[in-house]
Image (tube, rainbow, N blue to C red):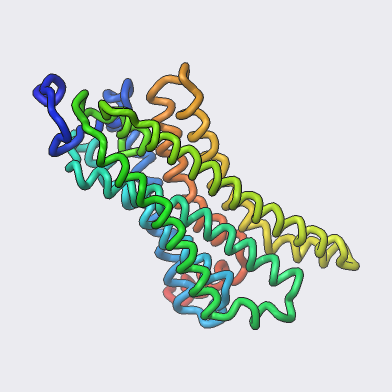
Length: 314
């Protein structure tokens, strides 16, 4: 590892992930909550997938989108957590040059896919509440599949330039990445050349997509709230709004840590490095952990199905 610190090279065969700089002595303790979060995320999202698969009454657009979200969360957490835990437990810091850019692609593409799924779920709630009689004819299985392909295609196509551009730069300073994963801006900062193209692309795509997704979500819920307030009774308004609360909670669980991490990494120059790394990990881990918990607790159909499975087993 000392040779990696001092050798002048161009495009090394591997990078070295430091973990959480400044907190190396605490890696063992930090691994405990991270391991617990990964276990909860894996079990929770697999449970959502199996529950929807086994229950015919859940074969509806809302739950199809929920399954897409669960798969996205599984890929997102699995692309980062195993390597992170190997750093904490076994001091296995080395990651292959190509594997680093592959991880970068998966992180950014599935983050964008998750944002697109939230827009699709907002569309589903809009049609279900504002145009309930045509819900089944508008959001057919083929339409849901087309929306899913569009969301995945958008995430993959817009994320492909991240590793493609980053791979073009000469890396001759160091191969040490001060993070637990191959985060885009942390990697390109190691390059010797002019990285403004990578930096500007990453910034513009993130701001554009986040702004576009949030705009459509707000637009959908503006129409939803108008429809809710037109309902004659308070009980009907509360019951209808209750069908949206799970979606709103998972949106907040995704966008708040993502926006917070993005702002601290870009503009928090006086923020300690370990704080930036921790916030970057939290926005990758919190949604996969919270999404199945929120939907499991807040969605009556899923909750009842799980209870029936538990009682049947007993």
